[in-house]
Image (tube, rainbow, N blue to C red; front, top):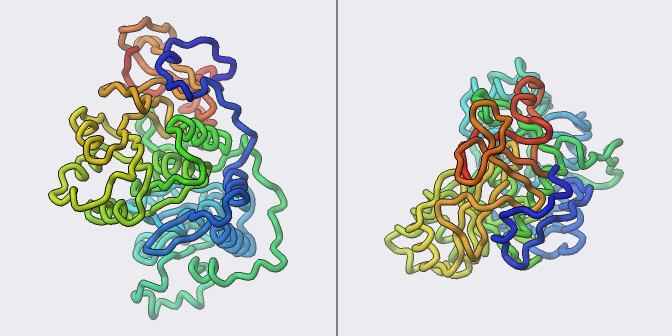
Amino acid sequence: MAEGLGERSWYRFYEQNIPRQLEIPEQTLLGMFKETEQKYPNNPALIFAGKTTSYSEMNIQVERLAKELVQRGVKKGDRISIYMPNSSNWVVAFFAIQRIGAIVVQTNPLYVESELKALLQDAGAIGIVSIPQLLPRITPIQAEVGLKIIALDWVSAFSGLKGLGLDDNPVFMDIEEVVANTSLDNLEPPAMESKSDEVAVLQYTGGTTGAPKGVMLTHHNLVANAMQAWGWISGTEGEERVLTVLPLFHIYALTACMNIAIISGGAMIILPRFDIDAVLQHINDYQPTFFPGAPTMYVAVINHPRIKEYKVSSIRCCLSGSAPLPKEVALRFGELTGGRLVEAYGLSEASPATHLNPIFHARVGSIGVPAPNTDAKIMDLETGEKELQPGEIGELVVKGDQVMLGYWQKTEETAATLKDGWLYTGDIAHR
């Protein structure tokens, strides 16, 4: 952690309302959700496929799915993969897994069978949450991987399941049926609740050294980064609407879309994938205030031939990541929407955000300044032991509440990347 930071040169670039240090509570992700549900039970939490789910309704769905998972033998510390596109039940499944102290294994729904098998085996996953369309990649590896539970969403909309005998197979469960009908009577809470310093998510990444690894992100890491990012964009609690088109299996979306929405009492406007016409229609219909994305998404918006036919002025702020943001894109997007589009930087090992551009004083071409509770320095490329001066080029290293616990079952790789609490990012930078 970057506790007790003294004066830092980058503080002069902070907006006046941004604290230099945040008090991060010893809270779990489930605790974060439950706190919001108590404060804003009737606020919309999820907007997906034309249906709006309030926080209180979502809480019931989370409890129902958690109960079913417990009854099927899932216990604290078990790993459960979520392997499907964005949907409202993606979010419900995430918090149901947290409800019983299990660990979410982030899984790209584009993975082919061999990639999926390698990831599930590395994580030791006992269950998977997916959709019927992806079953051809799951069922051939089920026995070898050791999957005890295959929970399926979108079953009612998929006619191809007829004749597969899923109703008679105890491995399968229908999420839609569970969240709609499971009784909460005699709900047995988990024997042990998670603690904030325990692992909540395995975020698989090529990381700083190439081969895919499971980044162990704790509840504290993820709650801290949500607080850092939410405080930075200075939104209005209980009123934000977050356009969620970035894939939730990616850490960027998990924090910038889901966790920011949850911690702020806002709504997630969810799309399963990026389709520019659908995105603009959702902006027009649901009026999001916050649109995290990638430069290619913003380019598609500003170049759409009918952009002026859509109401896009609700967008107040956008954080752009994953690639450099061209100056002309930021300027044109601001002209069209009236909102601020600024660049941020992060990596899976840091939950992900470590650097953010000031919303009203962004410097195009810069990754921004370290977030609150974050320290950073530039180290020499030869030894990684000498701190460099402003203007000198070296490796960016960071320290903060959002930095990972380490790599799953990879002590050598962890030791090479985390040194005395400093995360060596592998990225070249200068101050």
